[in-house]
Image (cartoon, rainbow, N blue to C red):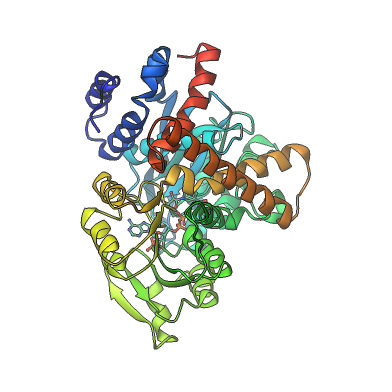
Length: 444
Ligand code: NDP
């Protein structure tokens, strides 16, 4: 879509953020959705000008000692993007591909996602170009302690509350939390995704994957359909992919493929989820090992081929830009009805155009994977109250939150004349709440 009200704003963003393609991609999508909002609320132009600039972007050195006694140096990041509706909230990603552009795109998207949950959380994100793969437990511990030694200066239970993301799971959150507590002497909910014995919330581990399936079920229901008997392809085999698989199977779908960054498995009989959990969560092995004990399944090198497998529902749950135009066309040609983004920005803009032109039911990441951060906010509530809710209590709240997200995004899309376009609906609904808060607080 051509920009009208916000074109000059995007020109400034491009000039200021050269060499940041992922950030520009995320901003352009939001601007193209909210452009018509400025016809109705011209006073929000100043908000748009402000919202695209992080409140703060911290970059720091992370020195740590490997098992051979050598000093290694990584780069750490935390973007505190927007605190209009609550403390900065968003995960930490440890992956060699992490750079300023990726952290900023993730932090920017987080503003709108967090707003859509209806909970009082602002947008932030962080991480490092540290690669946890192949590192010993002791190396992970030393890296996490060094990372938190610096990060602890900028975060707090009422200012900025990080969580996990790619490469940061329960083990890393534990080490990070332990170091924060040693430095600050505070037992406060400064991180979410904590272990259950020390302030974690039941259902947090499952929340992003379950939430994704709850939202897909709402969208399908709206179109007189459901997840039952659907053939599903899911990329990734990490936290989001595993729990999306679990909930999809519980609702009667058959998940036939999963992947990691080396390749994918296709099991036409349906994935054996216990075997995947053992491989990925316990043994930390590659997905390729699955075929050793499952002779009916096949392993293929490379990630892209997974989207050529025939399916009714496709759920990209690995990383950004993993579905391009060509892969989207394969999905359409094979009769795929719905795509839901468990990962952040996994579809390129060209792929999204293909979905929309072909009337695919499409749930964009800001709405589809918001269940994780929503339960993180519930973990913050429990920490503040010094209470622990049961699995069922948190799961019920998560279901309600995902239902409400569907109502918000479908209502906004309809109101702005683009019924069924949940990209537009998510961006507008997410933006309006933050815009009202920024305007009211005079922080534009
Ligand atoms: P994990 O680290 O648990 O798993 C990531 C999975 O994606 C692994 O299978 C990994 O394979 C694969 N992967 C990572 N990078 C690439 C790549 N460049 N190419 C292909 N595959 C890749 O992360 P999560 O499951 O937590 O996160 C997955 C996605 O979901 C991310 O986009 C994240 O931002 C998003 N997300 C996560 C939330 C959460 O609560 N955890 C909340 C909202 C969004 P390998 O092991 O080979 O690296």
